[in-house]
Length: 202
Image 1 (cartoon, rainbow, N blue to C red):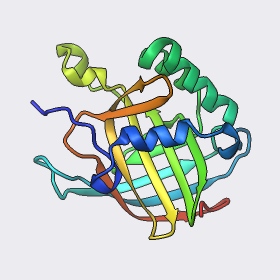
Image 2 (image 1 turned 135 degrees about the vertical axis):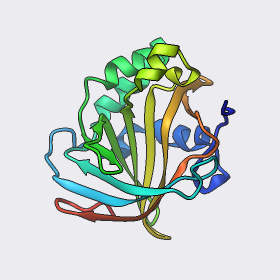
Image 3 (image 1 turned 180 degrees about the vertical axis):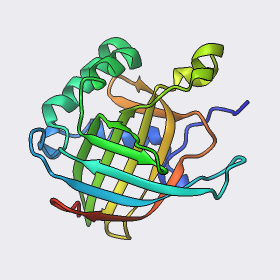
């Protein structure tokens, strides 16, 4: 059974710090593009890190139809504060910002895509409801509590790259910090990210 560990981008920072930085900053920093059809594609490669699939690669595609508005970001934050990740999932499931595809399948809805400006570039955070496998539901495995998928994509500065947590648990710490916990050992890496169509993230 895999040990649960908090992990993060650059393999040194935990996701607790990264997510806290995003959701505790003033909402005005987040781009409000909730109703704009961007028609933008981000493609790249997912590289697994650690475990039996270490080094395995597969295609990655993010279709961005709109960025999540500041108002919806606040709704997500309020849901997590009031009802934990079950309430967060309830609110998130009603959102649709695009689509995320891992491998060659049709993928799942990218419920929230949040864009923030950083020095030298742009950071995208993607939060989505992952599909639970039948075996997880039938046997009540521990992974059933990891209801979300989570990704961070960075454009500009030192290059276009990111990280992906396919099965994540989200909770609130100290009242205002989002903590993302990976079911596996390390998040997967996203490398060679490229954008096309619409307005590019940069």
